[in-house]
Length: 408
Image (cartoon, rainbow, N blue to C red; front, side):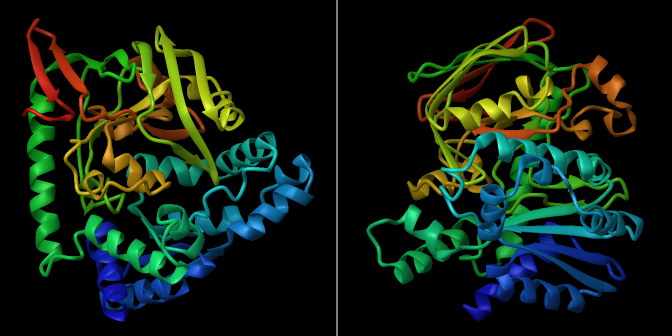
């Protein structure tokens, strides 16, 4: 395990943020991930980091705040929280965020309180969010196992065995089960880059989605769209991988064009609440109806965050025959589950997915068709029978997915 932790840390530092000598490294970490955080710090220093700073968090403490604090108190974001993010920006640092969710921890908490707190934090950290959104700050999101999460994934195993199994699955999705895992990542990047290039050169006007569980949906693309995958380029010209793992080729759609119904293929976990068997119906780009058998109030809070959370900000294509899907296990965490399935995201679009977008104002991006919101929530729609057909500007139709997998 010590060796695997060091390999994981190396992957995050070298493949994730692609640390350059002399840079500041900031790590946001749950306290339970202290051993991985220490391994990342060591890997960063060995790669030439000038300084490593750690910002600790804990979901159980967070729940106590939701239970006992007033909504007014929850809306207060301490100055030191904002200052810590400003320090990263002012020192041109890289940012690593570790997560270790406890599924269901907030199921009995008032969804309005959670929504209000999330909105307050996003507003307070707008400068930092804007910087990562345009890739001015390199960042990487990765995960750490825990007993509660592992038991949710593997309920029939004893706790210790469930955690061992979770680590095993992490290693497979991260390609750490391969001897030359950095080399495997390079091959993976090249494959996703090839598909991105095809989509970018196809001059696509819209995509049509259909499957047997009820998805019947069309979405348009803005002029000058850019698909990318696995490797993004910072404004400083340095490559990095924002999510570990990642299997997606993604872009941002035209926010005004969504028509029809998207039916979720997998549950969505939001702040520890599991949203199951849900669907969204769109007209002229906006959610006009939604349903959920479980987690309805949480889904409602997501959609009603602001005007932009009623619209789509991301379109992501992932073959059903992917390393994560092939494990036949729900992770109950979007970082993994979104990479098992084609997905969309409600909320904020990516300026970097539009030619020249990183230099545009919010108003210019909106005029070009890109969405803006405090939210960005991925939800999965890919199934083994999903069909995706692209219509091009010159009137052609291109089959992109057949039976859930890439055709191109």
